[in-house]
Length: 236
Length: 258
Image (tube, rainbow over all chains, first blue to last red; front, top):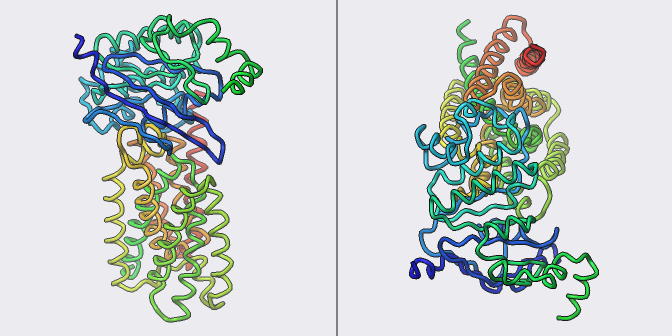
């Protein structure tokens, strides 16, 4: 078990990202081990989404992002802006996956996200936002990934829906032995599901087990409004 | 009747190719790209007329240069594709209008498929078939890329390369279609059949199929009517396509109220 735990699957060193001359992320360092659930938290505009995108090569950056060899990744974006009348059924959306999934495999992943197979015949733009997020989660595990990256997967969903999505993520993680990297704004979720938390506000503000690093002082400096952030910046 | 067969076949294949292409343009909400792209072909055709070489070659050369141009500008700046082509290509239309001799301008703007030689017709059909196959070959990746470039990228699809490949197919299809409907109406050849199909289709398969069916029927009917009534084929095609579009809108509304 210890051997498995010490398997590093991602190492990020000196990650810096600027967009149009504005520094978004500065000197970010962390690593992720197999089976870990890493939650990235921080206020709006802290660079959480940018960090996640840089990990899968969607953003240009300086520094290094090193995945261990042969790692397969699944990604679920924050939201998918899609027209309600897009001519695409849910089943067809699954068939767009490069792994060319069989019907059996599609039914299997639908089971993971607790959706009925009836949804396969529905239009991908017609289903509810919550259902679409579940479909995206199911889609992301089609290719049997080793690691899943979630960008605030419940941003547009009501509280009950959020709860069930996180429970489902937890089951996926434990049943399939996946490593999970997720962006979240919900501290309850972080306490309950994450093994490690990375507090982000342009820089790495903390990194460690949630109950150890999320002290009231740390949270105040992270979320304490502009004043706290401003003061914090000046201490460095 | 016999002289009608070859233009009829060319129009059907070119329309099938353009409609299929338009389906993906609609998915990415880049409906105006085809319109603007056809304008860039005009200076190429103008130069071809001036220096007496095949207008198709002139159009293709200018289109490919412009595709490389917009692809580079899109990734070097944060401008949207619609903005880039909007500015870039209307400028081309202005240049094309100035350098194309007056007597050829009308044909370049509105097309004339009946002027194609037998060899040109055969090449047009072969190229259309090739482009249709190329589009079907990449259609899954392309659809994913059009609905979410992020997700496509996350599963290892090289979205920039794919977009470049698509724009290249677009350029060749525009060069083909421009002899049929002309630079001004080319955008409609690409977009109207696909827009009509989207009104009635719920699945991707139905969308692509109906788009091609609408394109082919409008093209063959357009050629037939233009021959029998001695009218320009391009505008007749567009009018028939528009009729299909209105019919598809009615069907859509009827379904909604049901």
